[in-house]
Image (tube, rainbow, N blue to C red; front, side, top):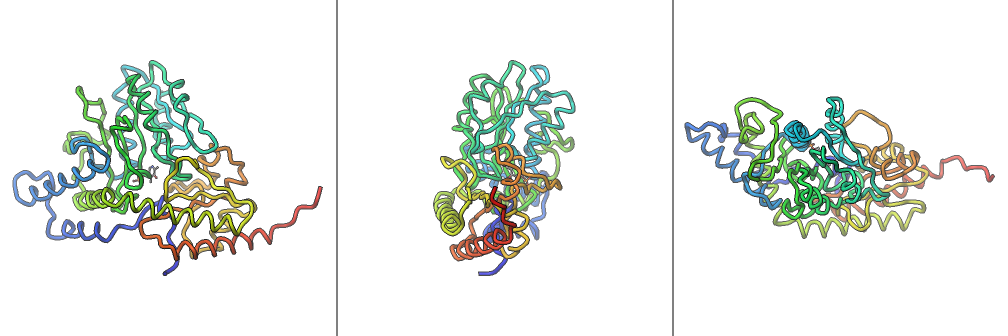
Amino acid sequence: MTTPVYLDNHATTKVDPRVLAAMLPWFGEEYGNASSRQHAFGWRAEAAVELARGRVARLIGAESREVIFTSGATESINLAIKGIVQAGTSRGNHVVTSAVEHPAVLDTCRALERQGVEVTVLPVDRHGRVAPEDVTRAITPRTVLVSIMTANNEVGTLEPVAAIGSLCAERGVPFHSDAAQAVGRVPVDVRTMNVTALSFSAHKMYGPKGVGALYLRSTRPPVPLVPQMDGGGHERGLRSGTLNVPGIVGFGEAASIALAEQQGEADRIRGLRDRLEAGLAAALPDITVNGDPSGRLPHNASITFVGARADRIMMEMKDVAVSAGSACGSADAGPSHVLKALGLAPAAAASTLRFGLGRFTTEEEIDYTIRRVVETVAAIRARMPKLEPA
Ligand SMILES: *Cc1c(COP(=O)(O)O)cnc(C)c1O
């Protein structure tokens, strides 16, 4: 075992060696532009892209033509939300989302708000779950989009997306879901979800950074979507720009591996996660596990350690890579908006660590982590000034 132990698989995952091997030729001799229609370099690149598109589509139960390649989930989310809202201005200008969304969704909605779009941000229960009835109540005749995530990136809660999808479909309101944490980790099927658009990313599922996809349901007439990038008309005019062929090939390989191994892998990782939570609970009083006990990501453990601040724990435990509740690349060091939405007090939110397990996590690493967290938290708590009895 080597340290630091990597337990931050919500932030990103290691590229699977099989994915790396599949990508390498496309950085070398196979350098064609997938849009070059006049020669073999282009034809081979295009064939590789289309093979990958089929693999990515299969993972989410979609058809190839419903997959648009982008630079990642952030871009897919921007394209879906801005694109659908801008295309719907004749019908209305109201968007419904939730308080626990990733900044890629919340900041995109805020940007639209500055342009006059009305945004309803739904609250969640103490487990981080959106109530489908709240979505029903929030929808008005002027609602042009509902965007609710598939799985939360801080506390792992699985949202009731299938129920939300069907209630949106009944009302003819497009439904987008940010599935960056779910695809490749838990079964995701765009048909049972009844989703109009779905955003996800290769680097969250053992693929490369800088490549993602937007699923856009194929309907007649097509879902109206205003492109956010003008140019050569790639990806059926919806996302111009030369395709990232090596990245897309890697994404396809990652999708194939996920489809074949997802179930067994999720069971193994859930076992390790449960071992981690049980080990910590057995040795430390006053800890609570966040997220929905009835449905959360198998690789997530969000734990509040009363009386020990997360930044302190991380500072004294540099040999284990975890994150505090809020770790979405934003510079703001304030308490996590997700933990706040769950109703955690500021002190509890500031004492919460997020553990993200993954394909390469071992039992030895989990046992080491239990030992290190227990000794670090116990030491910090022992140094706390004792409160005088009242
Ligand atoms: C990582 C993540 C994103 C952003 O994905 P990128 O591909 O890094 O842009 C969006 N939403 C959620 C829930 C995420 O976990």
